[in-house]
Image 1 (cartoon, rainbow, N blue to C red):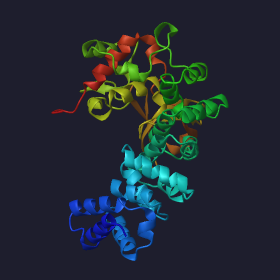
Image 2: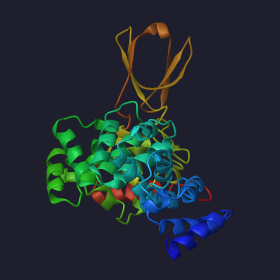
Image 3: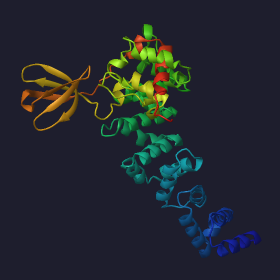
Image 4: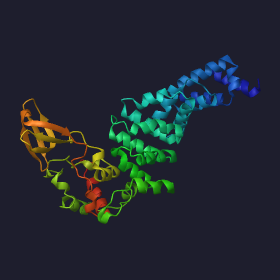
Length: 368
């Protein structure tokens, strides 16, 4: 045994790992040894096992697993990956998992009820830029049981890699790309760094048209433009945009859609643009539209605001609430399109749209 190895062995065997600094020193010392040296020494193997337990889920844990090619530690690797989806060691941890061919834990994580954990797992899978990751992400797009924000997150993640972008375009070409993610796919792929992807996206997933049928810039460009909130307020109140005919701001307007008094504290500018350009992609809870047919032959379209065994109250566009007995209703069906109409941007210039979003972004909770 060389003198260096002997010194390292002495250090490792006498270190109690009482502090994080001592643990880091022990890890660095152990990483100076090659796997064969550790495998042939029972005390070193025991030390490695102790260090793995102490550093679980950290960058040091990932380095140890990788350096010594340790099998059976996917649970700890997944912990590191899902808690650090943007860190180099988190991405490396996921790469190690995907390379192990034991990916059942990844599937289980993606099926978790913890939305943050699922979102982080999606992010770190995308950050690996590996083809294997796409096989886990694509099925989430078509899973209607998943929340729309997650599916849109998956779409953005896929668009970050060439193979993922190709997968999105293949789905679009086969007319299998779900409607709730089409706008996000269009926006993301329109600014992809690969010319062939941009060209095909322009053909299969054109951006929404603005005034005079001119395609709007991608959202990433819209949010960088400077807006005038005063003009945005004027647009909000204008007949063309007609926002005030469905929304209230500080007590003014029609109480039909969500109150926007504090919308700037809830949504970033990117999300505000998305809600205008693709209103049906994320319908807020309680604002699902219903098409109701009465036995009289009349039809009612609106929001069900309350329901009891004796009465159903429906708020119709304009904010009027009408009440019906269940015996009066022949059929009712929940709609998949938002009560907010699509295509509002066609009544305004690109700058008007930016100004409107600037105004909405300024509507924040008092004190923020």
